[in-house]
Image (cartoon, rainbow, N blue to C red; front, side, top):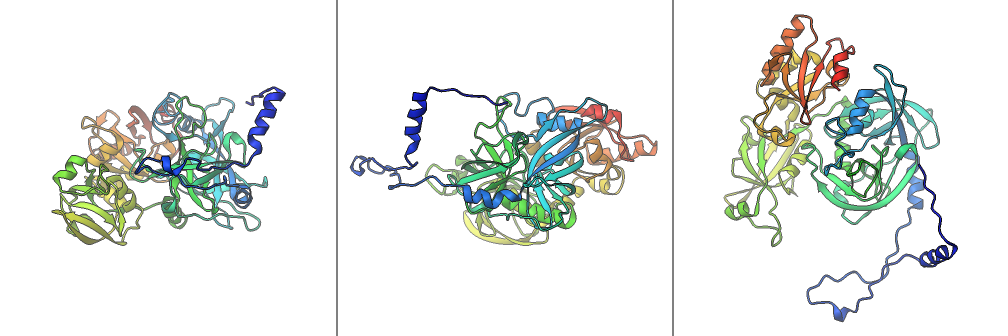
Length: 515
């Protein structure tokens, strides 16, 4: 909806006078009046940047994405976690993936809806990056280029844990593409532009600055987000965030919008360093493996720092690092000699801010890689070397979950893990919740088609409570032996749902109702 504004001729003239002079900032405060020790602003004149040349260079590589998605999946994405409108629509203070733009369709059983998002080309032969939630549940995906050409797209791989997906189109010639930059080099206050397809208006450009770095949105141990104030809205999902050198430093993925509307200037982008690691693996194998260290980390409070005799980087600032609360048996950390009570301060020479920072950095390292940790043990610095483990293998081995890869739940395409203290913390669960957490879902599997997602908690199969992965496997195996689809009772975002999973992958009415 557009709104027309009307103003008087005199007001228009006054406005013209105000903007006629070039935009500039000047320090007019006499230096002599500044209090001793006060921060002095930079002197001189600094013009606002002009993005015209940059936009001409990068815009041809930004695409619009149209997905035909199962209606129940699309409505769940639109409403945010919980499926009840608790995302942007009810004044929630927490950010969620902002939806693609949904186009209304005729109400029919098992219907699909048309949803639109954004993406960008990263190679001349047609690889396209977008958000997982833009294509999750899609039965058909098309990509529209900047010149209006529409091409069918194939989903090469999806990674729900980082909300990244890789598509492929087959062009008749070479496509313009853009490169991923180094998100570690981004600084608060730096100018950035977002390009995308908000509300179906393809090729839209907005500008702003980096508001903050390393935002932990409690969406899992896989992302530290870049916060920006560039206006981004419904349909911008999956679009690129550029710095002035024309490199992509993030994928626009989340917003905070208290009233369920558009941008209020608080948006979040997945850093390009995460994108690079995930996309490289999706291109090669179609799935992602993650590094594993094997410690339970604990953030360090000022009081704890005093007790540990730790020095803060600045007076009053929290100390950097994470306290090792426990070390998993047989883990890379145990083999490297890391002990409870150690404080991890660096990984491969780079400072570690807290436990979440360490987790994000470790999972981004390929399993089998040699890495180095800087530690403080009894206030004395030391370094240890370790071989990065495989988090997926560890998830399969957690508790009794190894059976799930071979039988029972494995036939449905899910990997299960025990509810460890860290998993409970990340998922916001207390000790009263018993079950097995879905660690991974195989793309295209019966579980995937039924709508099972990583992070779901299987609390029962049929009428049988399942407090562990082994219990889930046993009940699923029993249902399959009776040639019945297992009826899983899952906990998702505080709500219980029933999902019937057909081993053949065919649609089931009960699973549709459960969404």
